[in-house]
Length: 185
Ligand SMILES: Cc1cc2nc3c(=O)[nH]c(=O)nc-3n(C[C@H](O)[C@H](O)[C@H](O)COP(=O)(O)O)c2cc1C
Image (cartoon, rainbow, N blue to C red; front, side):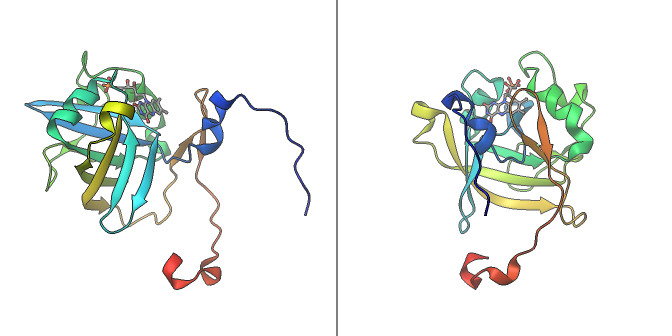
């Protein structure tokens, strides 16, 4: 098999290789105020219970709402919302109501007070599972307590961030189901 010739990469830019996405929109609510931020830095941590970790910068307006409420909704947008994803990630909820500004529908969630975004492919209602790394790394560990997903398309066209304002789009499917041990599926 052919090998790749490599060049040095500035370690500050390895994010371009490791941020797999999909880009998500995190909605929040605290004492009558609601907000949305764009997020790429998240990771699956465990299946049962369903744990997801993520970084929410303390400079973001969302940080205060989310840390106080200990809740959020992780919404998964598709390419139809590309400009909205960019707009939400480049404005702050301290100044505008992003639901109104970007024409998004706030749907009441079942388990948390944070609203779900109707225009997204999926909405994951989350409760804080472990906040011990918030002070040190702004790292929140969430338990997904309720998940809503559109039945179609099965493989949505999600956005994956590569830095520098450039996204990759999920596309071609490769099915290697047969090569997996049952426990790995
Ligand atoms: C593609 C993209 C990915 C982002 N990923 C994150 C992230 O993972 N964590 C974070 O704290 N901010 C991230 N941001 C920045 C926030 O979305 C941005 O600061 C936003 O304005 C915060 O909104 P708020 O002040 O209303 O909370 C990202 C922005 C973009 C455009």
